[in-house]
Length: 217
Image 1 (cartoon, rainbow, N blue to C red):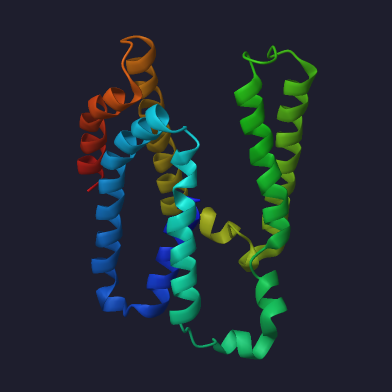
Image 2 (image 1 turned 90 degrees about the vertical axis):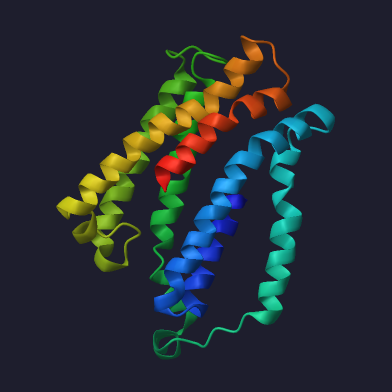
């Protein structure tokens, strides 16, 4: 979805933009994110009212599709020396596919447990407990894989264990958690408690989004 588009933009910039000019393009991407944060609640409310909430996600398909076609025909990235030396398969193994295969279902397990727990099933239900246990097992397995993969790991241990990186990661985790709790629940509060329409809830949420964007800058 949109996360893939955003990540793809970062990768494309890294390949085609000189290092000295990259901060300008990164700033443009940051500005785009700020605009999207303001327009998103309004468009989301309009889609929910007039069409269906699923269009909040479908909207990525035409944008991403056009972008993919343009990149496919116009973007030309020269092969790196590593690709010519080791081949595509060796480069693919360097992306830590095993770690991805283990990490992705672990996140799915914990998200399903948090989504179902206390709503569809009691927290003591066997399904919820099994999901949490499976999440823990997969997460431990992922950490072991990262240790064994060393420099080719998704999260290299020698990088994650650096004090500055570890502290910054913990800081961003808690800041992001507090921010997204507000972004998620404030529109629900407007609609459920104040009985507002999705569009009006989006309008009333603009002040929060603008404050978050300004604080991020």
